[in-house]
Amino acid sequence: MSKLGVLGLGSFSTLFYIKELNALYNKKHGGFSTCPFTMLNINFDAINNLLPNTSNHLDNLVLNPLNKLAQLNVHSIIVPNITLHETLDRLNIPSNIIHPVTQTIIKLKDDNHRHVTVFGSLYTMQSNYISSAFKSHHISVLQPSEEDRLIIENLRVVIYNGTETTEQLATFRSLIAKYTQNGAVVFACTELSVAYNNQNNLVYDMARIQINTAIYEL
Image (cartoon, rainbow, N blue to C red):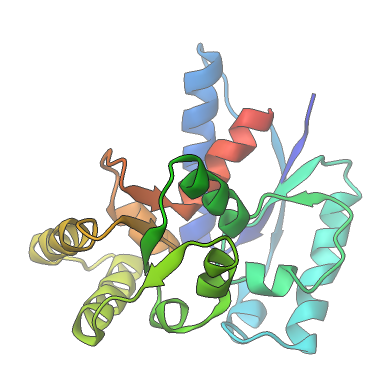
């Protein structure tokens, strides 16, 4: 049986991933089943202070705990932070990393989507990391307008702080409706995953795609 490893990175995102892992595993296996995984929880503060940029210092901070987790005989590892995967791509990890970008590309191609808009942090929406990966698979990336990028960034912050309003969430849903007219919308931020739990076949949530892949392998 495959054994899942989880790298614990701050309570907000990690608790969301744990909750979703348990819910999907229970849906798959029924009864009172909960997802069997091994978690190595680390102090996220030092890592977060270096994000979103890659660096040798950040490489070293991440590599050691991932190697420790791999030594616990896990078959695959899930890391509950989309931005950190840009650093993971630079490292040689002896276990399979369930990669949100790679898995999302697979799903988009399976569903024949060739145009997407990425919703995430301001850095993510303006950087080349995700867009270059998509473009290498002939998926074009459309950018939200500058005004909409700022709205999404502000929403991400207030969701993290737990201060979002119903009006802000309604605006978020309106932005999703607006940009799904041009193709698929991809969430690349856990805060947005928390804020949106609707079923929409034009919305691709990287966090939930990671989680679904992990449960499929168990």
